[in-house]
Length: 157
Image (cartoon, rainbow, N blue to C red):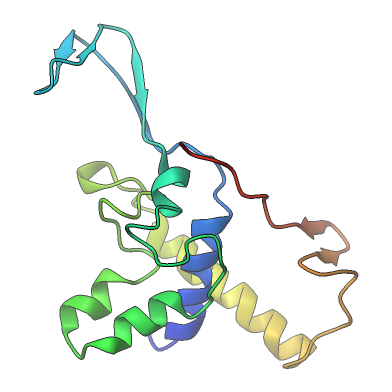
């Protein structure tokens, strides 16, 4: 599974541009919280992270609205550093990629999920071949009980 770097990159890029939610993890304040800039989050308020906006920030990702299935593969292979190899994996969390959460609250099942997705994609690739069936339209994949259409871009400002 670890050798499927291009597939891993494709999965990460797909998740980056097609999030299951525009906001990531949320936290409910147990007490009033005052930030360094004097912003106050009152007790019982909920704070969420705008992961969709972070994922399309041009300061982080060049040409952020364009799908590049090899974006993370290129970042992993630009440098022979082991740190870059791990940093750009599908399951890796950091402040720029929060779909799995981050830190001690990161999803513990992400490793299992990543392997399951890779198995499904590999099986489909082997079953359908490199070129696959004719597509019903640009960006649309339809299967008996599966329909995937890319999400439209949203303005995060």
